[in-house]
Amino acid sequence: MDYIMLYRLMQCMREGLVPDMDVYDAAAWSAPGPLSKASVANGSAPMKFPDFTRGRWQERSASQIATQD
Image 1 (cartoon, rainbow, N blue to C red):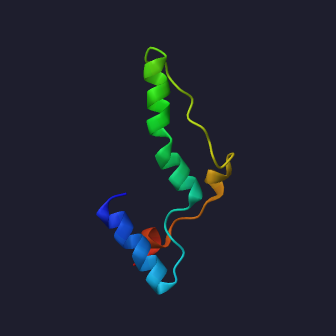
Image 2 (cartoon, rainbow, N blue to C red):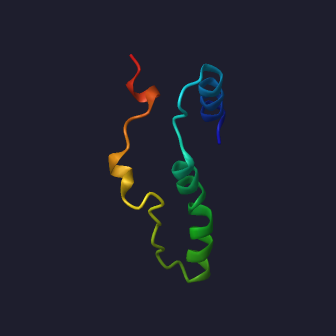
């Protein structure tokens, strides 16, 4: 996680705001490493990226930082 994301997470915690990312974001951000390793082990075969939300990502609302004025 880079400095800006860590700073924003701490800001949300200090101000009692809902964080901009959730467990599904964390899982999605962690997936490319193991998927890349599996792809290389299989001769650079494409890997299917899992949908950790089971399609519910389409129902998510925008984060507070994206809707602030």
